[in-house]
Length: 129
Image 1 (cartoon, rainbow, N blue to C red):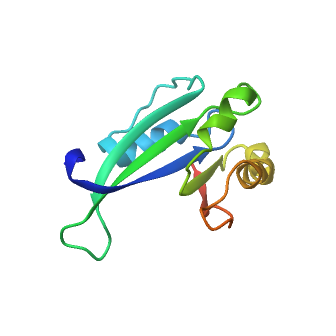
Image 2 (image 1 turned 135 degrees about the vertical axis):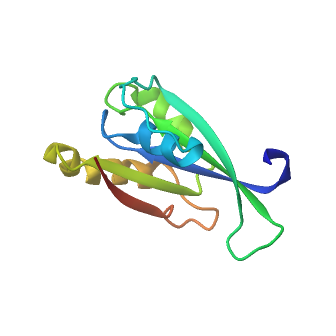
């Protein structure tokens, strides 16, 4: 179905290490749940083609860019923000400090990217675990 996509939509998934970004993406894309922890180095990229909402024949290729914590890879991260159409900012409800840093992640998103019209990239906040 990947060859059928009419449009590619790049979505960043950001947040502190071990908040469950990779597991969240894997669950959505592959319908699997990974119980073991695997550290993301730099960035992990996964895609899924879906039917465009409200359409019978138009498909979107959703590209999920799972970015490792900025504190570990500050120079690499900036490049991943290019051409972003949406963002998932994630925190771990069992670790309050990850929620405290949500504002920093959102600020980083707003500073490093914008839509074609110059607006802030749409984002959602996800509480995980």
